[in-house]
Image (cartoon, rainbow over all chains, first blue to last red; front, side):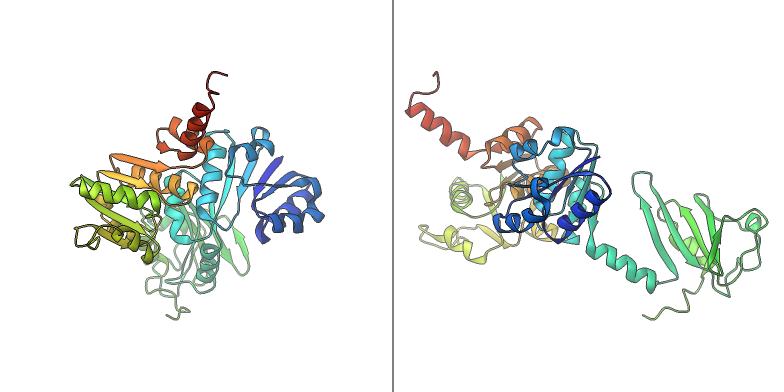
Length: 226
Length: 142
């Protein structure tokens, strides 16, 4: 596929290298002359000098035939603008934006720019994964579909311990999709019995986290230190 | 009317002053506290003494927008020195806060024109400069 990457800083440059390595066609666009010159040696014709928020610069890079536009500059307004124009003016079907300041996440959403990726959020999610509060980890939020996938560690005092999946009466809008036990995962059947220490993956309607936690880890996770 | 102006540069400050003397309620938001001086200049009294409002912050910060009174605003003017900033914050004013009249200054004629087609009220000083030069040189019908 043909990918336009806006911003040839650390993120853009490394993405470009990886994508080219996977056989994709890539054009990097960099507005800073010095940075452009420093990446030109490596990327040659695959990097162009210019401000990608100028429409003619995007057109020169061939946005009309781009399969994907990735905006990873250090400026959130620029990233939003490039993605909005790519999506709405040039009808590019896939866009990805970098969020520099997590407080701007709402703005990306407001303008329909999804996915918007923030390094801060990713690291926070990793921290949450390593040190979960209440034993619950958000794995994935499918915002358009209004669904969430979460992971819970079953505590020893949980009501579900020793109960088979078919007998656990979970609230409507929730479903156990997988159980991780002793290092391997499986899809539970009706007669699978939940054990303490299992890690359970559930798909949920948003807002059900708290009621679900009561089934699997009623007193929060024992290993959490606040 | 309640007019909220983001960006107190030459253009923003001048509009703020004329709107205030026109009897409107005017609130100015700028990230640079010193931009306040441009609002005081030539008025013979401070901006606040004339009942002008001033908030330090950027147009991307929801707290700053709320503090500057965006929920009461009838008019929102984006006049920072960044085209992309103006285009984004103008859309926030329209789509998130439902401000009735939103104006954005956009130097680049191409961006100004495309966003105008999308329903955003953009004003491009560059477009005006180009057509004034063309008129002076009699190039319009060339």
